[in-house]
Image (tube, rainbow, N blue to C red; front, side, top):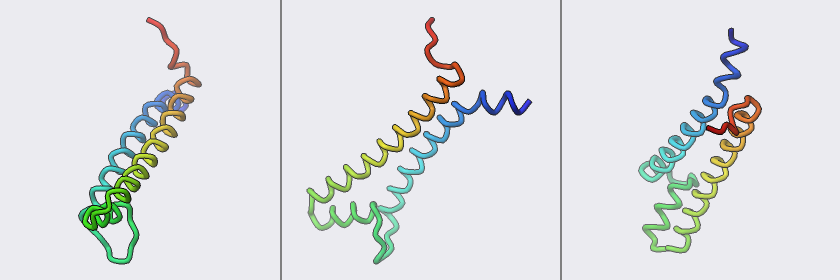
Length: 95
């Protein structure tokens, strides 16, 4: 029974992992904005420091890094999920 259910659920499992990672990434950014540890480099701390120091170019650069990390991870999850759906015969259906 497990040999049938686990492979069939794998594409949906990957979709859940993708959504969970996106939520965790947003929560990490929000948490780093509120909780700052002196002497500890963090992306949220860099965002807040650039905002308070009035450095819009550095603020924009950090925001682009955050966006790039999110896009790379989304592409990674999407590629793996697409391959899993194709391998299981779940893509390419026409109505």
